[in-house]
Length: 176
Image 1 (cartoon, one colour):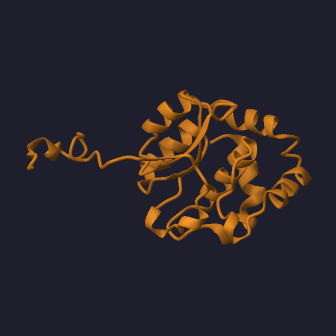
Image 2 (cartoon, rainbow, N blue to C red):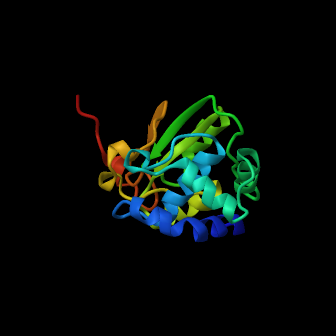
């Protein structure tokens, strides 16, 4: 994880805790907020009072924000898969795994405004690749807290087809 994210987490932690859903890490809220601010997109928890102006004020007071462009550059620095500068569309990434669908969406001008994945190792890989920790169990997250978006991506369970899942899915037969 980048030093920038660590600094952002330190100054926003207490502000983000009340917005953290059960089963999610507070870092997910903070990461969504700073990426949303960097891309001028809606904040998670806006319906419950999360305010962009209050978050930006905290970041400015701590020398972590001059403008959206500089924040975006700081968040993208060192990432193997960086977020595009302008959005042609917004999307959410549910059952995200390690972010395979996100790569395609970003490569076509999409900006992710929310992600969710409950498997801890997949969350870590997602964080390493995109600089943001996905929220946890989507069933514990209120729909009104999820930011407005143009497209919803949702991964299907890969266990039946993967080595990890012992490829038990290859014995399934389609019934019409």
